Image (cartoon, rainbow, N blue to C red):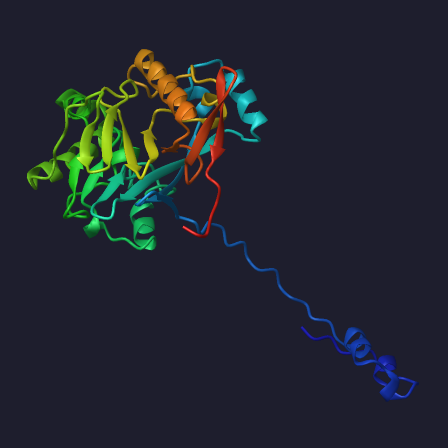
Length: 323
């Protein structure tokens, strides 16, 4: 509000022309502004990276809180200490990322986020795909690293009417068993329904994993990385000598599992297989210097690795507005 000047200031003794206008304003009026409400939320939901002739778009599905000290298979004090070194707390707010590969001829969606399976803080992949300039009707292939709900939950035959759903047959054979669907509760039923929707439309095509790679579209291949689930797969996009590998759930907690790749997580179906798969992937990425894209590393989840003793340093992609 505007405050009136006291009478002594309204009639200055000196000539009015000598009183600076700025001083008059300062003495005669002050404006009181109400504090604005905190708005919350974040704007960035997608990030673009040029890879040779390919365009990679990271899509945020949101984040979820995880009690990682309970989930990682090491003494809890070690996890808490590692988080403290990274200025992180518990529960750990954990990104859920998906990725879109535009080869110029085909559009491949790598994982699809959680939709409504993991609460209101996730499920934003579809909105961010649209915000990035694409539509779900344009997607040709949906490749899923594995059939956990935060990776396949956002896939739906009706939402992606022109897409084929691809994943390793070992995963579908395991997770679609009636006993596994029942064990998975609502999430298990939802995942089974998603696959059924694509199968009924004739657009579910599982593949048999091969160490030499399985072609998805030209320039994009699937490679087995079994352990986290029976058919967990990594995907590779490669163009003009540049390469990115999409790791899915090869790892979960950057502050712990980059310095110490031996640490497994409770979600691993086969920890004895998951650990060497992770260690081999880390070593190859550091040795060859290519990009990796990780579902549960802080958005956009794209970076490179550098060996550091028995562990690795995570080097996030440099932010750019020129993509």
